[in-house]
Image (cartoon, rainbow, N blue to C red):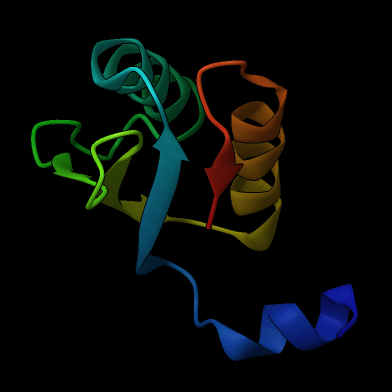
Length: 90
């Protein structure tokens, strides 16, 4: 799927769910809040939910943001990928 196809799937602005996974919940929450504040300042970091894996080795954080454009989402995912706090982002 190319960029134009992805752009057609979403009607901006829209609410968009982000999910990240890693090992250190506190470090992840701080990094996620910083990235959201930088790239989506109109979104709230107060609604971050967490869930531990069945064996407790990983934690997943979820938050809904207000996405204004595909470019904004791409910047957020680039920042998430560049952060050492996260193992994976969806």
